[in-house]
Image (cartoon, rainbow, N blue to C red; front, side):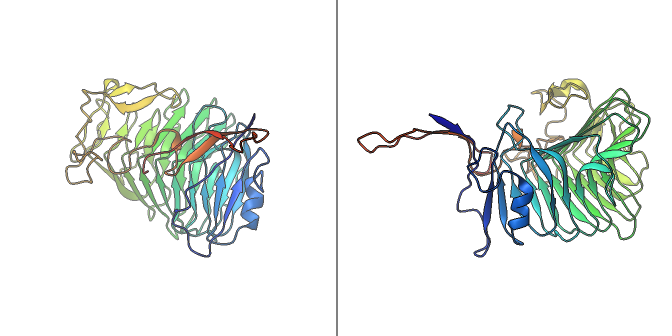
Length: 368
């Protein structure tokens, strides 16, 4: 029996008639075993599927409109698509989509127009969509760095994403997600995302650094764990979100908050804001996102406490505060909406009766 790892997708995906698809896998069963050669071969509008693997893929650079799907972000070896390096989306890659991959790197250098971020959406890129991804950055020096970075004039949305920072040195400010520039402004939407920092000091870390005062930030159903929630001078709003840290929710006050939760003494002014405590979660381990369960407990005061005129939860009830509320609740393990085959067992030979029995194991996220 031979076990191989591969990724397949439903043929009914909404691809244009002229678009091609490419497969990337580490075990030799696809044309490419790294993402960058597939990107180089693809034309604008093509789709790239990146298989789950116990081995890491290298970082890559996208300079045209592409759709890239991974197999998810599970912590079980071999059941996730993990990029060890920097993913860069250039200003020429408008409308690029990236989903269901885990991007991780440590001690990386800054880019030409970015911080030391693991995901870099460069200046001028428009309508970039990032979904069900994890951006994890670890660093031990004083360099200012971040998990995700959005450049001048770029527009981007992040849905069902995790931004994780892990640092041993607290001498420099660092950001889970950073917006930069003031002219031209950038615009960022954050929906059902988690921001978490593993560090001994919350004061040096921000969930989102909003950059210049012409930038626009919209946040819905987020959690800010062990970090200041919002810093910088951009304008915008945060709704149905949680700051579980003993720090100011919005440092500069230019981003309004409503129907949000924070610890006693740190609840911001605004309509519908309430007090949060650790018993509102099933299992919250502050600063440890891999060990935490951010589902609300059965008796949580945050359940059905979101904006009453906001889109309801999937069951039709009033929106919960937190990453599992609203219409796009956080997806466990970043699974895509199409079937993902994780293991396929093919006999070494066909029996005499001609029946070939193939065994497989896979997963599929919500949406199918």
